[in-house]
Image (cartoon, rainbow, N blue to C red):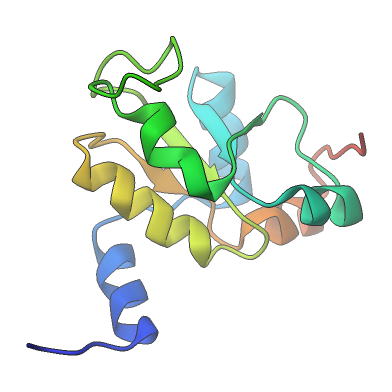
Length: 128
């Protein structure tokens, strides 16, 4: 058995993704991409949220987006969905997006730098 550290696993995940910066993410969302915030409630409460982002916490993400899952959300009915995952700083979101690709969602990717990069770019945020 080959044992890999988290740095190697993250690098492998990111090698499969076409990660988007905040401006590219905003443009993709305007064009119909689904932005998914996987951060826990405490992080969203502390730092804020991206208006229009769909909150699906990390522990149920695959079940909600797998078109074969009985627990999928109604819109998750095909493998061509353009899904952009965000977390706080863009680490967990890379792993999550790669996991969605493993399910067959070939257009899944993440927001490079996460919510922090979005906020630093001066893009809209909200609390609530």
